Amino acid sequence: MPDHPFTEATTRSSVSRRAFYPRFIGLGVGFFCVAAVFIERPATPVWTWALLIGFCYLWPFLAYWLSRRSPSPLRAERRQVLIDSLLGGFFIGAMQYNTLPSAVLLSMMAMNNCATGGAAFVLRGLLAQMAGMVLAGLLLGFGFAPRTSQMQIYACIPMLIVHPLVIGMVLYRLAMQLVRHKQALRELSRTDGLTGLFNRSYWDELFRLEFSHRQTRGGDAALALIDVDHFKNINDRYGHPLGDVVLRQVGACIARNLRVGDLSGRYGGDEFCVLLPGANGALAYEVMERLREDIARLDFDSAPQLSTSLSIGIAAFEPSMQDALEWIAAADRALYAAKHDGRNRISVAPSLGSHEAPLVAAL
Image (cartoon, rainbow, N blue to C red; front, side):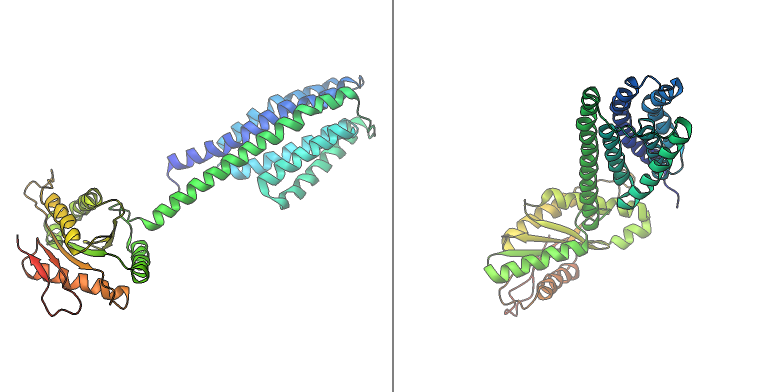
C-alpha cells in the first residue's frame, strides 16, 4: 500500500532538511580552506574560483531542491554525497595536495560518507574523490605542493571546529528521534488501539509478575473481570461503529475510576480486566461499584435510548493459589455468577477452601 501523501511529503522534507544544514554549513566554512590556497597561488584560473563559489554556496540549495523533488530522498542524498566527494577530490587536486587543507577535506568527506551510508559507503566516496583528483589533474595539470602556510592553517581551523560539531548535532538529533520512535513502538505494542488500555498480552505479563510478587512477599491484591452486558445485541441493533464507541467509552470510564497503580486491560472483545494491587475483596468491590455507576450514566448522542451496564467478577489473591490461571478462574466464576443472576451487578468470589457460592450484590 502506498504511503499517505502527507506522510510521504513529511518524510521527504525531513530527509532533505536534515541533509541541507550540514552541507550548507560545512561547505560554507570549507570554502575558506580552499580559498586560502588559491589566494596564495595567483595562477589559479577564474573558472576554478567560480566553481568553488558555486559548489560551496549554490550547490547546497540545488541539492536540497533535487532531494525534495526525488521520489526517494535517501537515494538522492546518497548520489549527492558522492557528488560532494567528487568535487571535494577535484579541489584537493586543484590545491595540488596542500597537506592540511587536503587532510581536512578528506576527513570531513569521510565523515559525511560514513554518516550517509556506513563504512561500506566510505569506499564509494573515496573512489569518487580519486576520480575528482584525476579530473583536476587533466584540467589543471598534475602537481604536488604539500607545504601549508600559516594563513592556510588559520583558514582550516573553523572547518575543524564547526563541521564535526554540526555532524555531532545531526547524529544526536537522529539518536533522540530513534529513541522517541522506539518508545512509541513500545507503547503501540502494549496498548489496545481501540480503548487505550493495555492489550491482553502485555496485561497478562504484568498480571503474572504481580502473582509471582504476591506469592513471594504476600499482601493483598484483587482481580476483576468485567463484561459489557448484552454487547452482541448492541452490535446487532446499532451496528459495529457504535459498538466501538461503547468500548472506547467503557475503556475511558475504567481508566478514570481506578486508583493510581491499578492495571487495566482489554481482555478480548467486550471483556476487560483490572488488577488491583494492595486491595482486598471489599476495597476492590468499592472501586468496581464506582465504575459500574459511572458506566450506567453514559449517554450516546447517536442512540439516546441506548443504556449500558457491566457484570463484574472479583477474586482476591490467596496464598494457596497454585498458579495465576487459578486466580483468573476464580474471577471468571464470579463473573459467571453475576451474569447468571441477572447482570448489571458485582460478584465476589468466596475463599478457595469455602463451599459458599459467590457473593453477588443485587441491584
